[in-house]
Figure 1 (cartoon, rainbow, N blue to C red):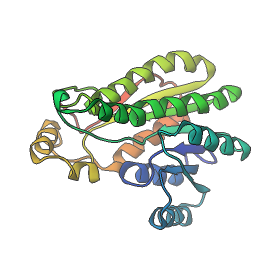
Figure 2 (figure 1 turned 45 degrees about the vertical axis):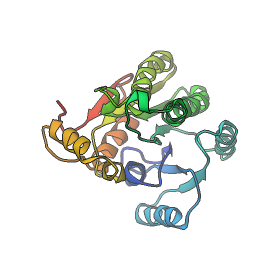
Figure 3 (figure 1 turned 90 degrees about the vertical axis):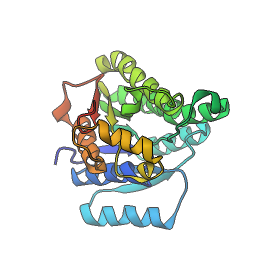
Length: 247
């Protein structure tokens, strides 16, 4: 198990890719703090099922990603647990599509608050803890939309492009301190996000892939697990595409 006894903090764990990352981390022997915005019996039942299946400690944590005080309070609680944060996965995000002229600035701000600024705040807080130990891995879940920018992607795509740029910049700052920072850029995955897409946009994204299919959340989770582990010890500042060979 490549992550045996490592402690991993993951945001956005109540659906899709987040659930797959939780399961993969537990499979690899890690303990997990699994974030969601709100409590639900369904979510806690999922976490219990994963813990029973794989062992390891799984603790749900709850906060709004736009609530800076709540984020700080939760990180403080984690500090008090005396378990170091070995890995941070900034997975939580919200999707949006629409032409710039038809997109209110308030919507763009909301998307940046979750997709970019929340990840930056968590990275800043957790990196402080990692610096003390001169060890850690931070993985930002970006998107190929942040690499292949196009019309109608002024909010989501640009927020992910910002996350990709920050990954490179922060790697230059933190890697000499023992902290590796990388990003993963998934293509379109078989999650509820794909179900919400318009048929034309869906067909276009699948058509661009050499494999002509949706990705599985588990396929992205495998790459996240690798980057979290010592097997990726010489990788930092990179954005890894997991997109089925996108054109």
